[in-house]
Amino acid sequence: MPKLSNRIAAIAPGGKNGWEVHFAAAQQARAGRDVLFCSIGDHDFATPEESVEACVRALREGKHHYSDIPGIARLRDALARISETSTGVPTKRENIIATIGGQAALFGAAQACVDPGDHAIIVSPYYATYPGTFRLAGAEVGVVLAMPEAGFQPTREVLEAAVRPNTRALLINSPNNPTGTIYTRQTLAAIAEFAIAHDLWLISDEVYWSVAGSGTHLSPLALPAMAERTLVVNSLSKSHAMTGWRVGWLRAPEEVIRQLGELNLVVTYGLPEFISWAAAEAAENRWGVDEIAATYARRRELFLSALAGANSLGVRGSEGGMYVMLDVRAIEPSGEAFAWRLLEEEAMAVMPGESYGPAATGHVRVSLCLPEEKLKDAAARLKRLSQRYAAPGKPGGKEAAE
Image (cartoon, rainbow, N blue to C red; front, side):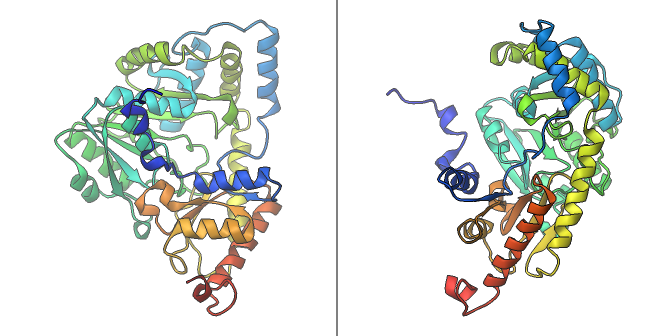
């Protein structure tokens, strides 16, 4: 077989992509083991019926053809209105390009902002695809640490320490996956000042904007002098329970959107037409948005209440999003080791913090995409394992594990 390109080989160097525990759990489940999955951010409920019926109606009306490359006008208008709501910044159709999910919007943003040999900064904890997305664009990736002791809020100092002469972009995510942290106005102001000072593009992943929980989402797009340099990644996946529909978008200056239309032309050739029309209706009518947000706020409160008493497990961040980030360092320095042991002994899958960069070392991410009774069960399994860790000399206890 001929040699594969270095570009493809660089996406996941060493063959690890952070999903090893989840994939092992899935393999065990296929073999017949009853595994409790708290590892993936996919809703456990269906897309709202109104959105489904809109899709069926679009199919019956014959919308089976190619769609406009940047997205049909009605969809772009609807997504522009969501962007206005979520960012507080006036947005036109010309500021929007529809993409195959939020990941394609992120891919497009990276392609637009960096050239091969450029440098991009990402903030850890980060979503697992961020490094590979920039590496695929040919950029070097610098990781700055937003530490748990600071509430996972990045500081101007760590950003300044990471900047290079060839730095061209900074990527942030709030509400954050995996931590649920919502960046404060002070944090975002420091990020904006940093981006302006070094003339950087700022890519802001805001797909969890509607699931802000107890916090208030603020977009850096709304800060002074940031509209010309900020690209906002968004998606209907989380807000409208449409993960499998693959409808995302990028909100950016008009010239960026015009150029990215050429990228859509050679990568996806636009979205499926019937999905586009149904997604436009879903976006226009906000089907499911408020109910989904209320569901995760309730689940977060229930899970944390059920976890009470597990003093060896600390909660970090977790103001918003669809996850709870647990600090396990009091009993296990490695979140990956804790996750593997949880799978082995309790048949429960979580994501190791190390999957999201070094700032999340010694943590695990627990997805709230489960019914309430299963979340209570998840808390019970976590408490049992933490007790075994904290019981030296007993089978499965810390001394035995060592």
